[in-house]
Image 1 (spheres, one colour):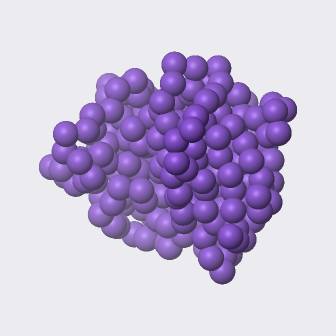
Image 2 (cartoon, helix red, strand yellow):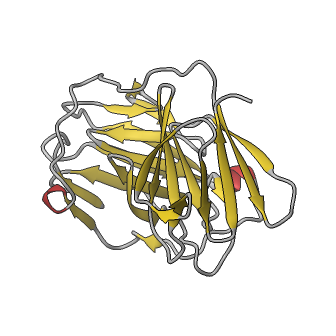
Length: 234
């Protein structure tokens, strides 16, 4: 089942399943976001058989997919739709593995989700076509180990990499105390920032619980029994 992970300023707000065509807007739609940077009816994500197609609904500030302004576009798993200051990460496990399923997500079929920005934090309207992303020279790497096992090496190539037990996590880990999205690593040019997102298992740096931390080469952190080392150079 395809799903959307909804972010505001790199903070995960909600995960929802996509079972039908949905409209996102400020006044009407299936997902309503009360923010002046979003048009009354801003964007449609159309379910067309097994495909999902994003359509801008003549919005004032435009709709962006992977930082490129679009009118209509067929979505691929991992694409990020940007509407004002909100981002919607699209994931479709069927594009990766038809045997995978997603459980535990909110289903927006038959109801409307309303998000009031005043309850999240004040969000500044982003000018049309603006992009805060700058290209890093080379992707950083994350070394993950558990117990005495050999570390697994992963490149951090996305703007936002999710760590957790959810099937749509970019780095999937297991554990009863670990959140579906336990932490996120956000990339801005050559700078990376890790943020705690949820779960009983906290994000720890050098044994201390942290909510957010700008990563430097060689930094080590842990989530439950998993140990990680962030490297920008070997």
